[in-house]
Length: 121
Image 1 (cartoon, rainbow, N blue to C red):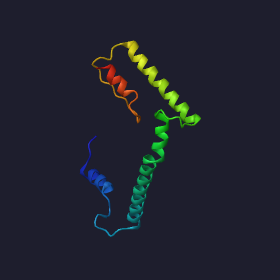
Image 2 (image 1 turned 180 degrees about the vertical axis):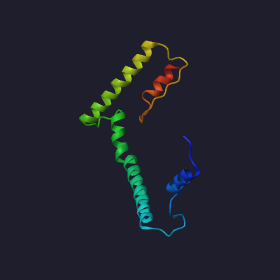
Image 3 (image 1 turned 90 degrees about the horizontal axis):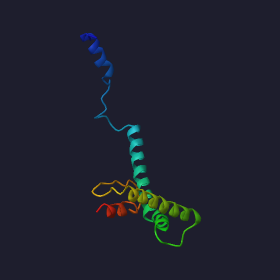
Image 4 (image 1 turned 45 degrees about the vertical axis):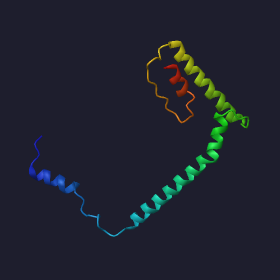
């Protein structure tokens, strides 16, 4: 398909913005974006504060040896332990981890990555 110079100019004209706003005074949309940015920063602060305090306390109860756990937290702890044991047993049964690299993608305390690293030594 051959494009004529007139067609090419038409395409350029259609895709070229008709106004330039790079040096225009702030508009209402700029103010809205600024407010949204400030809100995002406040949200990040709120999330960080939660995970550094209450969130960490809850996480610590589940993954530590603490007896201060409710039934749901205990179920999570037990399920996590069962999953780790099952995976470690699969690796032991295969007996071929020596010299291999493993990626444990998660946000835990390394309860899978650490024993896998030790098995690969």
